[in-house]
Length: 266
Ligand code: ADP
Image 1: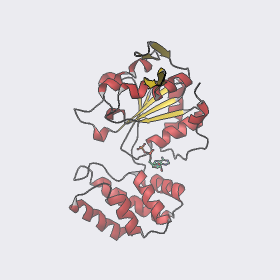
Image 2 (image 1 turned 120 degrees about the vertical axis):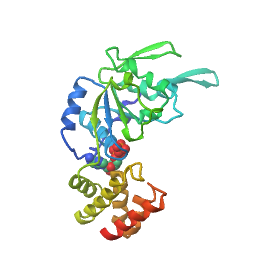
Image 3 (image 1 turned 135 degrees about the horizontal axis):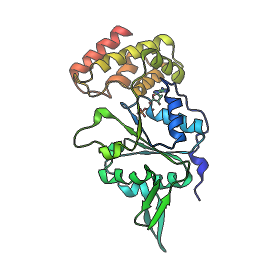
Image 4 (image 1 turned 30 degrees about the horizontal axis):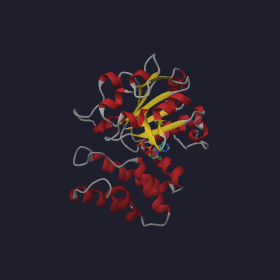
């Protein structure tokens, strides 16, 4: 038997709502609708799902998807042991059995044959066939599937098929508004309103460069990193270069634009 309590979130994860998403998610959960959270990296998607799992009191199993992931990594496989083989459930199967919320982060990274295994779980069947084991798992009534999706990264080669997309209700996420983002930084790290406001300004400079040399702007996650460094006594300029500039680009023109903005703002 799986110990369900290990997947329960004990403490409330801080989440600052930006709209009616909490109420709408609760409605989606009541109908056990599969949910897709869309938006750029580091804008609060995972934090939202952690918060909702805590609020609903349901276990949460998160899987970071990658291109090497196979269906067996999600569903399970036989393990070779000294005296034979033993079946080991994958995270999706465990979630379906125990009634967890299963959060597949960046599902589009996974190969298409992997995405297909979620199909029978996302319609009226709510089942998961374990082909290799010859078992059909019926999902626990509390089970819910959630996937995240970053529209910015998608290309024709790598996108979810309509037949997959049209199995979900979706929440559109984006970076929070300037005021909301500054208060998130304060709440997460304890920095002053003044420093928080300045960090958000730098992020806005970078976000305006999206599509003009930058694939993606500075995320809220990176702002939290910079805020933590500043809180720890690192000079703002060093913290910003380390957390906000160096990770996102190697282009010297863009770096110098961002560095100018940091020097002007701090
Ligand atoms: P992703 O969209 O990639 O899943 P995360 O949910 O991990 O991003 O967010 C990255 C970080 O940004 C979080 O760890 C948290 O510190 C902060 N964050 C972003 N949005 C919010 C929010 N609305 N409330 C609280 N923290 C947030």
